[in-house]
Length: 311
Ligand code: ATP
Ligand code: RIB
Image (cartoon, rainbow, N blue to C red; front, side):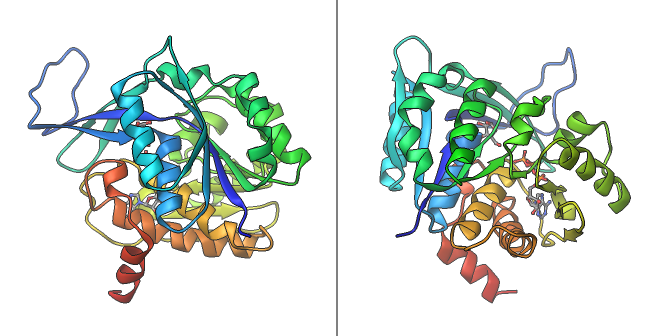
């Protein structure tokens, strides 16, 4: 039987404002349009993977409110295993205020709420679901302490760990040592290494810093440039598809979900298989950036296969 992709992560309700341009400090501007859509980095990654054909289980927490109930209901409809999503009586479901400009660029403020309350006890209670998975994925919208605990369980049981260090922040070395694949974007890799990844030499330098600290593989997503993959010896850049982006929200999340879906079916997680998975992830994300919103823009496998045929 296919082993699960397990995601430890955030669940947010996204309040999305379309604006002509992103707001400057001290400025007030008018929005052209407002929408409430399901989001959260962890949730987006889970929905992306499920829609592409993975078996997905989720470790998370929502508040006892309409937003939380609505998102968990949608998860169930998408056939994601929700038995490890807890409900907090003291904290609201996470929320994100997202502004998207006419060029499809966004700025996001996250209110973590219940997401940050997933603690070591919750992880201990979810031990079996981690142990039985092929891959465990985490981001930084939940507590680092709980992520370390979950990654320890994963590594003790031969489960591949993927860390998407978003939003940007420093990573304790203890966590990097437990990480098989680290997948930051350009901003996050700068936060982690102080290196602007403008060319292949810089990407190599940044990847070396993360590998020296314990990561086995480094994937750096480079927006419209595609994504770079490096291990100790090799490096490659897989170019992105040329498309007109209208909203890049969840580009990175769909990339991670797609990557995990491809790797779930591979016997071995090696450089060549990751490279192949990145090609698929670039395709999926290129569909996502052409649509608005987080989860509404995540494609089902049929749509991706159709897009390949139209190349
Ligand atoms: P976001 O925070 O906007 O969700 P991110 O910053 O985490 O995204 P990016 O590096 O911007 O991640 O994008 C992830 C992947 O999405 C890229 O590696 C690429 O495959 C695809 N992508 C992003 N922007 C574009 C674009 N303009 N055209 C084509 N593909 C894109
Ligand atoms: O990566 C996009 C996501 O970041 C949004 O859905 C928002 O909830 C924030 O977590």
